[in-house]
Length: 188
Image 1: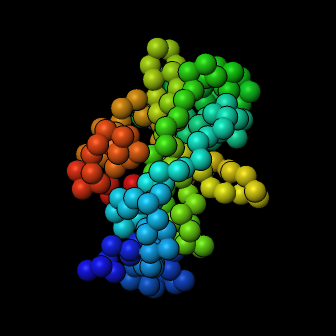
Image 2: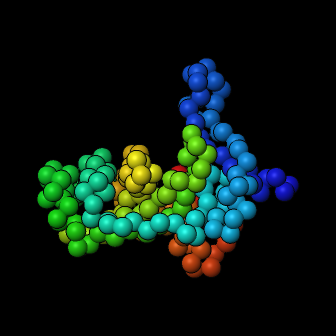
Image 3: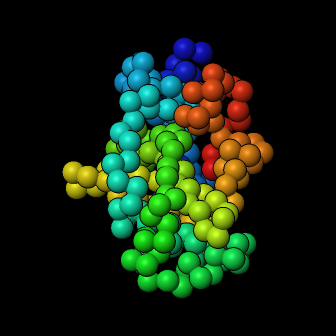
């Protein structure tokens, strides 16, 4: 039972399409090196909280706003009122959301190659036509800095991420005094 507390998983692509776990295979590993540190709090087998996460230095970075706009473009079918944002030039989009753009740290996962807790998830919010929207972005270490990725996550009206059932456990839940067991915290 003690070993289970330190066991974590990442999802990898199997080498062969004939693998019964295709297209996503669970790679289990011993994460005790990190989970013994008070800085990390295990949420479930896939995610943890890093109580010393590095905040986003500049939410207005064009690399971030371009990923948000990419998500907007892919979300027009579910949020058609965002169509004008998807059709803008990236610089124009960045200027439009500049004053309303914010983010919150959600959780961390392990890199599937290095098995180190280096992938941080943030929820970015912006307002357009008096409606606030949100999208989840993944921040990965890259060449001594960070790069943000969307991985196909759609843009939703604000409140969706924390309101879906089951809602994933996040830094906000910890600050509110909830334990990881109080939220399902499944893989999303």
